[in-house]
Image (tube, rainbow, N blue to C red):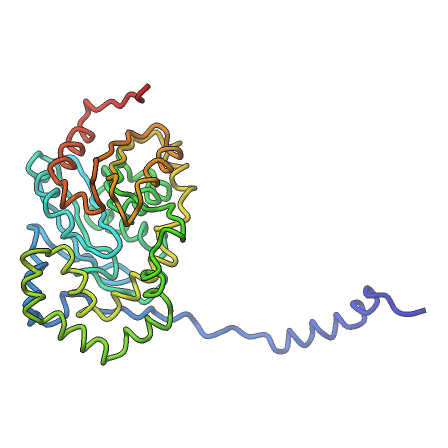
Length: 341
């Protein structure tokens, strides 16, 4: 009669455990992530540099956080109600240039900052997942000694704001505004070009010195200088691609791993939080299609959904007056949303 599997296990297990015991060892200790430089560390010789100066807003400073320096600005009266503005995937805090000063002029203390890997914030060589982004904001608020704030997010920043309210609910002061918000996008709605650009092969090629040299030459052309005046928001993408060695990798990681997708749990948490929620979305948004406004509204039914007819994705630039009016009313104590019948 043959031996059973249990008998074989009983026979060989002691020898196996002794072998594992003798060979057991720890791997190498974890290493400190590589920190890539921001625009603050690079030469300002490009004509396109003027599109996003380091002192675009007053009250600028740097916070030395564990994963690199973070550029932030505090504008508005020091005794004003606190509000944080979170930008999106590819364009740093310049995207709030027509919104932040208005909020500050109406008495709010406004915190703007560049996400890791964008603008004047350093770029750690890590996975750019949701936790990285929410922890960055939590540590920044600790740095400026804020216990709570209203939170406003644009595009991917909407996903960051929503996840932040789930991860750090005690830091949210009862109001969350989401503009053209990502967070639950489906892979089918992310362009083939974006998927191609985020592949490891393309990222490897784009990090090569010849490619970087070519992008710098392109950014220094006269055409680039003209774009600074006619379309500065889009020109900042080319400026970062040319001058930031880890920018493309950071954006690609956000597309693969970051707060673009997979945040249904966070929106459901927001629905249970008791926070007042404002959703603003344009019907002609080709980056985060308008259908996601309805999907988010279904997950957060108490939210007030405001539709901007024919509005595209960059609402804080193209429809700044409407966005400002909506935010200023939403942030007041008098705001009270009653679901439309």
